[in-house]
Structure formats: C-alpha cells, structure tokens
Length: 233
Length: 319
Picture (cartoon, each protein chain N blue to C red):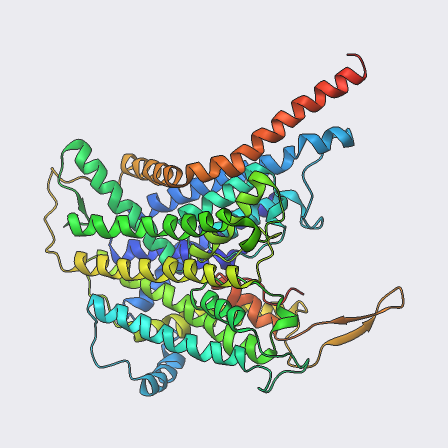
C-alpha cells in the first residue's frame, strides 16, 4: 500500500517537470543535451533527408507516417521470416510462420506488442534486437510525434515535420531515459548478453536451461514505450 | 513502473505550456488521476473480497490470489494491472484471466476508454478529442458558440472526433461477433459462458487499443486469431492517427476568435467535471452491452451461486 502511494506521489511530482522539458524539446528551445545531440541528429538528417520544409500540411504528415511505417514493417517482417538463416541465432530457431510473423510485425509496428508466441522459444536474438527492439523505439516515437503534432495543431501552431519529430523523440526523449533505466536494471542483475542460454544445476540436482539475452535494454524501452515482455525471465 | 506513465502524464503538461494555460493542464491531469484512482480502488476491493465461493470452502476470508505472484501480492497486482491497461503497456504481473469480475470489468473499461493516461502521445490526443466533444455538447446546452482555445469547433471537427471514437468499438465488436458466431472453428476459448466472451472481447479490445495485454487462457496462435487481430491492430492505430492529424490541421488553420464574455471557459472545475461525465457516459454507452454480458453477468452469477451454496449448506445442516 505504501509502495503504491509513493509511486503515485513520484508521478505527480515529476510529470510537470518532464512535461516542461518535452515542451522545450518540441518548441525547439535550447536544452543542455544540445551539445551532444545536435551533431548526431544532423548526421541522421543527412541520411534520411527529412526535406527542407519546416512544417508539413496535414496530408503530408500522414503520408510521412504511413510510408515510414510501411518500410519499417517490411524490414521487420523479412527479419522474422528469415531468422533461420540470419546470424545471432544461437539456439538455431527456424523462421517464423508467415501468419505469426505478420501478426507480430503489425503488432509491434502499432506499438501494441500483442504476442501470440513465447519469446525465447520463437525468436532469435537478431529478431528480438534488430527487428522488435527497433520497432519499440520507432513506434513509440511515432505515437509521440502524433501527440505533439496534435498539440501543435490545436494550439494554432504549424504541425511540424514528421521526420524531425520522430528523430527528436527518439534521440532526445526515449533513448536517454531508456539508457539510464537499462543501466539501473543491469546494476540489479538483469542480463544483457548475446551469449548462449545458461545451463545451471538446480538445488534438486536437475539441470535447467535458462534463456538469457539482451533483456535489460528491452525491459526499459518496453515499459517506457508501453511495450511488454518479450523475454519472460 | 514510473517509466510507464512518464510520457502520457507529462504530455498533458507539455500541452499546458504549448497552450499557455497551465491551469487547464492541471485540471485535466486531476480528472484523469481521479478516474485512475477509482479504477485502482474498485479493482483492489474486488480482489480483496475475492471469490465468496472459494472463501466459503476455505472458511477464512482471504484475498484472491489465483494467478498472482505471491511476492507481489494482491494490492500491487491490482494497481499494476489498472495502470498497464490504462497506459496501453499491457505488461502483466498477474494473470488477468484470474481476476475477480470487478477487476476484469475495470481493466476492460480502461481499454475501451483509452485515456486513463493512454498511449504514447495518441492517448493524450484522445483526451483532447473528448475535450472537444465536451466543448461542443456544453456549448449546445448553454447556447454559446463552441470554442476550444479560441478556435470555433464546427462540423468537420465534430465528424473527425466522432470518427476517432467510433473506430475503436468497430474494431473490437465486429471481429468479436464473428468469432463468437463460429466458436468451434475459429476460437480457442478455454472458459465457459460469459467468462469466455470476456476473453474474446479482451483480445480484440487490447489489439485495437494497441495495448497488447491478453486476458490469456485463449489459444491465440492460430491463423484466425493472427489475421483477425491484425485487422483490429491496423485500423485501431492508423485511422485514428490520420483523423487526429487532420483534426489538428483544420484547427490550426482557423483564425482565432477573441475571448469575450460569451466564450465558454474550458479551464474551470465545472467544465472539467462535465468532461469527466462525457468520457464515462460515452465509454459506458458504447461498450455497456458487452460488459453486461461478460463481466457484470459473471459477477452476478458468483453472487447467485453464493446464495444457493449457502442454502444447500443450510439444508444439509438443517438450519
């Protein structure tokens, strides 16, 4: 009970502060992260070329969302289907069925992460990290960008550029927080490794295989990005 | 646990800064906070009282611990589940299938409303859709021009807002109905009657709300479930996104109307209360039939069984 109360109080306390810093980011005001992030972001912009326009019209913004999501979806679907022949597959898992792969892709693409499978026995490390981990950031970033564009719109501002919003919500909001919390999880002993599953001898003398993997970073982005366990450790 | 709600809660304040109206942000925040607290309390009470049938057998009142981790306990499990269904995270630390009916009811209700903190960004946007509808409704009631932040709310905005709110029931109820119509072929329902109904509806509600948690107990890795939930997932995500952007676009292009005495203020306690009412009524009306058939019926049946059980025991002992 006390724990619940404390959690609630913390949330009430930090929401305004964090809300203000998000406003700073998306209003384009200078923040203390600028020094590190501006060079990284300009590198990203050089690759994805978000277009020179400062702002998009409603339909341009929508098109940007749909196209980028489609591309990401195809990429992830291919990884899932081909995981049997891709590297980072220590337990030699076969490719995912087409219908399950489709469901998984769409589910992670829409920031839902509904799972009709058991993480450790279906997906290789490549699928977990390159495909699903990637989508966790981009889908949460997409949702956040839509929210920001909506707020800009109702308050009478221009909608902004989707690609810039997406990049900034990942580099300036999702990544820093999940880095910090992943480190905290690592400190408390949550595994982060690409090594093979661990085989241990239990107290009763039986052997048990424990699936490990890059759990720590997954846990933090999943909670932050409103995702769910892929590894049920 | 705090991470989950960091962005949705904070975004309300981000809005406050954008709109230059922190007072309204605080009101909205308190409103959602209140709905959230009620949800937690109701679920916790349900879990604490637990199943009267089981407790009768145990002859000792004990909270419902089925499908929960004992180290987490019933109170925190209730809290966690209400929070994760509300925030569209869907992480679970207890099996939702084993929740008491009251708990299951609140969790489903959370999925239907989608705003008790809501998803990344989009959840906050839903909240504003409800605000816009409330402005429109109250404007009609008191005969003032409906304005939100100095911009007139007109027909296109209302059409888009209603579309956003209607997509969700469509994506949930239609596939559920199809599944239930062909139970032998399609479904993998493992619980009888109203509990099974709740399983099916929950799966789609969770898909469409982009939540992901499952009531579990459902055998869901089949072609039917994979493909039909894809449908709910896609239209539950992209149509509202498109409508939200269009809505924002059309509002941003309007000329602001100056604030006059005739303007309906949106940063008052009264207006916030009305919004709360609108949210609950709209949410309840859309999904009430399904809730009644599922969770509420289950709850009543438990009560009824309890009574008959007592009678039987009474007869046995000649009381």
